[in-house]
Each structure stands twice: as structure tokens, then as C-alpha cells.
Length: 402
Ligand SMILES: *Cc1c(COP(=O)(O)O)cnc(C)c1O
Image (cartoon, rainbow, N blue to C red):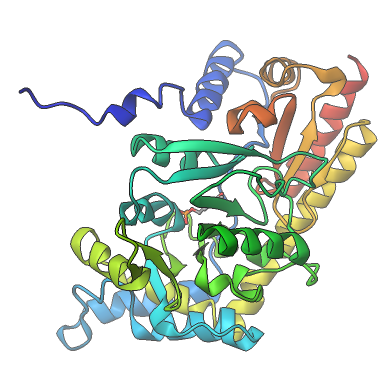
């Protein structure tokens, strides 16, 4: 037999959303070389790293320059000083019982959100919110898993109805990309109750937790009693501390978490993940981990908080701008994303093209995030505040002229 490809690739025929946006923007720039393009679609942060992080990373590079302080391969799941800082800073200091050995440091959340699937049988049925961060869907399709979409609409506050049927694995992401929605403690408790009743597993992506300003919303799923027996939490320093290019994040797998074998025995997931990482991963870089640990110092905390405060102020400009253009605006208060309906029920790709051509503004069409995203678009607050304000004025003129 000849070598054959993973047939999952045949399932992911659609073009990756951000590549399609980039292709259309490049085509527009080529045909309008003088156009003033303002990108409001970028899902990447733009502010430099906090000074405390930079200093720690400089010191780490110096460590590597001397034989006595040189670091080669580190522990696959992260240095103890970082795992300890995370457990204390993000959990125990907030009254959530998480130990350092339940923290698995990685090179960013996206890797683990897909890689975690190595632990689960192919026949698990996976529930994925719609609209959604596209990587969850594609990682499951590559693994040929059955995916059921969970509609997240204005009616259910973009937090998804608890399903009637059976889902084995459920992805949840709050604060949400792309809708900017947060989930209430009560609603998240219902998801945890569902998972416990069905012996299913929640994969909780809280990459944006540090954007939460209204403390009544949960920042971790482990704030909900019983979640340590049914949930894995994924976090990242990417959006919270500007680490998109540095690459560092972590996954929490509680010791209480176990899943059935096909013969009905239970196996703890932590040891399985340790084995998987030992086999396919060699740890995040020493320099990145030193930088991450600096986020947990008093200066690091204060400085990174100022950066996310800045993005949230820009999100306020976006919300205000959409309202004054007569459009809806959800999200952007505890998340860097604002989600809105296209004017007059226009198709979102059509809106994207017309807005780009008329104003040079780039947004992200909602249908790229799933069927429920149709007729919506996402604006991010990662851009320059002044340019964003300028874009919102142009957008208002464009919408008024429709
Ligand atoms: C940006 C983002 C991540 C983080 O990815 P990294 O690999 O850590 O950079 C995770 N989940 C969502 C929903 C995101 O938008």
C-alpha cells in the first residue's frame, strides 16, 4: 500500500479565516496603493512587553551565556518556580485549590487545545460552540472526530444552551473569542452540572481571563465546585501579557480528574498528559518561562494590568462608535473583542468587502467563526487607540450612507 494522508485533512477543505481576510486585504492594497488601511480585525496584540518581563528575559539570556548558570533542556512541564508562581498567583491567592504539579507549562494554549485530543478516543462526540475560535474545530476534524455545534446566540447571552443530548467532550471559552461574551457563575455551574451528570469533560479556554473587570464573572472554571473532576483549563500569556511572539502558556489538569477506559476503568488524566508531553514535547524555552514568572511579581502584575486596561479603553471606543452608527455592540467590557450585527442584515463577507473598499477598514466576518456568526462581524481592540477612533468615524459615515 502507498503512504496515505490522514483523511481528516479532507474534512478541513475550507480556507482558514484569517488567511482569506489577509488575501482580500492584500488584493485591495494592490489595487488601491494609496488607500489608508486600518486593521480592526487583528487577533494579535500590539503593545510591547512589560518592563518587568523584559528585564527578566534579559537576565535569563545572561544566565545562558555562562557555563555555571546555563540551562539546557528543562523539565517538560515547566520549571517549578513558574508552576509554583502560577498556582499561587492565579489560583490559591484567589481561594482556588490548585497545586503546582497540576500546572503544565507549554509554548502557548493553541498547541495544547489541539494536542490534548491525543488523550481521548476517536469516537468521543465533541461539542463546540458556534461561533468559535476556528482552531478547536479544525483540530477535531483532523482527528476525524464527530463535532456537534452548540449555538451561542444573543438569546442565550452567547454562552450556549445546555444540550439535551450527549456530548463527551465540550469546549468552552470565556471571555469569548469572537463574541467578547463572559459567562455568569450560574450558567457555568450548569455546564459543570451537565458534565458531571454525563461523565463528560469540559475543555475550558480562559486565555482572556485577565480582561475580566466585573469580578462577579468567574475567571477560572475551578471557581465552580466539582469542576476539578470534570474540567481542564487552558491559559495563555499571549493576550494577557503580550506573549504572542514569546510563546508561553499553561494547562491545568487537576489530580481529581479521571476519564474511563473502554472497559470502564478510570484513569487519571494528569499522568497520561505527562506521558504524552514527555513523548512529543520538550518544554517551553527557559527565557520565555523566566519572562512569564516576572508577570507574577508586583511590578509585572501592575504593568501587564495597565496594558490590558489600555485595550479595554480602546474596546470602549469601539462600542461607543458602533452605537453612534446605530449598530449593536456586545462584548468589549471584559474582553478585547466587540461583536456586532451587520447593518440592514447584510451578508458579512459582503459587508467586509464593501467596508474595505469604501473606507479601508478591515473587520473579521462573523461567518468565518461558524454558521451562527453569519450576519455579524468582530472588531478587536488591539489596534492603536487613535487609529481605532478614526476608523469608527469612517465606519459611522459609511453606515449612515447605506
Ligand atoms: C489567542 C487565543 C489563544 C492563545 O493562543 P496561544 O497559542 O497561547 O498564543 C487561545 N484561545 C483563544 C480563544 C485565543 O483567541
